[in-house]
Image (cartoon, rainbow over all chains, first blue to last red; front, side, top):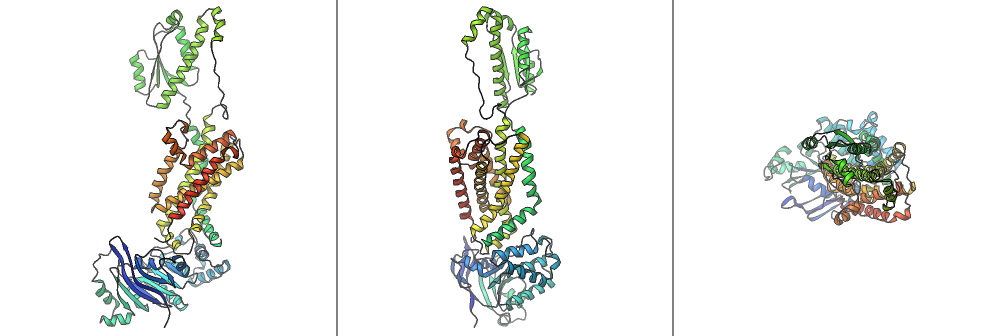
Length: 247
Length: 374
C-alpha cells in the first residue's frame, strides 16, 4: 500500500454564501495519476489552489506532502510543481531563460540547471528554438514546455490545471506521454480536465459536481458501477444533477 | 541570496528587452528637462498693453515710452475710447489698458498729482496680478523722476535725503532665474514618475498575464520578490537621475553647489520610498488600468502639494501639513537646497530622516499587503 501524499478531509472554501468547494474528502497515493473531473465552475480549480497553498480553506483538514494547508503553505510549495490554466511562462524570455529562472527560484544549482535544461531541450526537440522568445512558440509547444518547467525541480507532486485546453489531439497525446514519464519517475500527478478520454488515462478519478465530490474510483470501476462503457456517460449521469449554471 | 540572483537576472532581461521602457529611461528625461523649464516659467513677459491716451502730451508720451522700454510689455494698440479699450480686452488682444486722462501733464505740473486708470483682464490670474503690479512699479518710478523734473533745482537737491531706497539681492539664484528654480524640481518629477509608475505597472502586468500565480506557487519569499522588483528599478532610476544631472549641467550650466554624493544619497533613499509606493499600489490593483489611475491620483497630489509650482510657505496650515506627508515635498526641498544653495548633509539631515521613514513605511506596507496565499 503506497503512502498517501495528499489527504483531504471535509475541505471547504466559501466565498460569502457561495460554496465553491463543499466538504470534499479524498486522498491521493504516492506515484499515482489522479484525475480531477468536473464541469466548468464545479470547484476544481479552487480545490487545487488550496492544495497548492495559493488559497486558504474555509474549513476542513488537508495536507500535501505531509504539510498542513493552513500553516505550512510555503513548505508545501517547495515540494510541488504547478501548471495553471493560464499560460504561465514569461513571453519575453527565451526558453532557456524561463527554465533558468524557475529552476533558480526552486533552488536548483547552476550546474544542474545547465545540465538539465540541455537535456530537456533535447527531449522536447527544441534545440533550435532554445534561444527564441517563448512568446513566439505555438501553444502546443508552450504547454509542453510549461509542464517540463513545472517538474524541472523534481517535485513530489505536480498539479496540472486543464493542461491540454486548446491543444490539438496529437500534442495532447504527446503531453500524456510526458505525464506518464513523470509518473514513472516517481512524481505524483494531480490533473484536472474536461476531456473524458484523458480521464481514462488516470489511475483514479474524482468527479466534482457543484463543489462536492460525487464519485471517486478507477475509470474501469466507475464505468462498471454506472453500467456503461464510456466515461462520457458516467460524467453525464453525474453532471446532469448540477444546479449551478456553468460559465 | 542565490534565489534573488535569479530573480534579478530575469527582471533585468525583461527590462532591457522592452524597448518602450528603454526609451522612457533615456529619451523622456532628456526631452522633459529640455522642454519643461522653458514652459514652466512663472516670470510673466509679453503682457499686452493698450494705451488710451486722452492727453497726447510730452509727459504722457514719456510714460508710454517708459512702459514700453521696461521689456515686460508689448504694445497692441492705441484705442480711441474707453469702449474701444474694453473691446481689446474682451477679444483677448490686450491684458491691460492704461487710460491717461486729458489734462494729465497740466495737472501733474500744477497740482503735483494725477490719477490714471488701469484696466486689467483677470482671466489669467497670474498675468493680471503680476502685470498690474509691474505697471504700478513703472508708474512709481515715473513719479519719482517726475518730482525731479518739475521741481526747481533748489528743491531737488534736498529730495534724495527724504527717500529710502530699497535694493534687493537674490541669494543663491542671483538673477532670480526661474530655470534655476525649476530644473532641479523637474529632475525630481522625473524620478517620481519613473519610480511611481514603472514598478506599479510592472507587478500588475504579471498579475494580468498570470505569471504572478506561478510565482506565488514557488517557495520565493515575499522579501525576495519585492527586492527583485525594487533593485532593477532603483538602478534604472539612478541612471535617469544621472542623465538628468548631466542635462542640467550641459544645457543649463547648473552644477550642484553642494556635494554630489549627498545628492545621490538623497536620490537613492527617495527612490526606495517611491518604489515602495509603486509596489504598494500594485498589491492593491488587479489591472494596469486601476494601478495607473491610483498612481496618477496620488502623484498629482504629491506634485501639486510638493512646492513644485507653488510655495509651501504660502499654503494654508492644513495644506502645509498634507504637503509634509508626501515624500516628494521633502526631496524637492532638499534638491533645491543642495543644488542651488550648496547645503551639506548636516543642514538637511532631518529631511533624510523623513525620506528614510517614508521608505521603511511604504515598503513594509507593500511587503505586508503582498499575499502569496489569499
